Amino acid sequence: MTGIKGLLMNSELYEYILETSVFPRESEALRQLRNATADHPWSVMSTAPDEGQLMALLLRLINAKKTIEIGVFTGYSLLVTALSIPDDGKITAIDIDRQAYEVGLPMIRKAGVEHKIEFVESPALPVLQKLLEEPGNEGCFDFAYVDADKVNYLSYHESLLKLVRLGGVIVYDNTLWGGTVAVDDESLVVERLRPGRVRTIEFNKFIAADARVQIAHVSAGDGVTFCLRIA
Image (cartoon, rainbow, N blue to C red; front, side):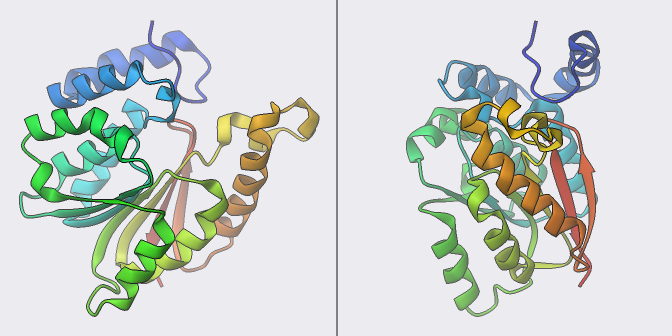
């Protein structure tokens, strides 16, 4: 039995989705990376495979070619993106931990897509600021995926709205934070989840009122918010 990665609490139904629609279409490289990540002590941080399938569809729908990823971990979502964009596409992938990225690097190399990835080992905000300072970067990215520290989600959002083109998409992961965003009594929430819960609630309220994006808040994985830049 595969552990439930999202908020669909019927394990049989979630297993049905995976076995019927997700795993049969998952590439061998993605399968191997997912299995390698399962042994990592922080494997829960990995992008859920059904979420990855949805991302791949979206990347192809918008013909994404130039993308940003903030928070790479072992690289499942990164490999999804690399497999979905053209051979001359580019991903700026930012993470503070290259060691985790190297867990998935052999599978990325085996898939023949490493040349599409520029991995930057750094906190994300300085990298985003540098991109904005370089001529030609504003409005030139098609897609961004954010799965990193919740403290900076609002700051990431402001930077990415300048970097991503009109009609481009920004995707934020973990926007249901294990379901804790709907819990009224914080004392019922595990202590380690409380800071992220507060930040996520703040972020969700902000995004819901942000007229610069059209959004869809989806219960895949740990909650995913898709933002289409319209202004």
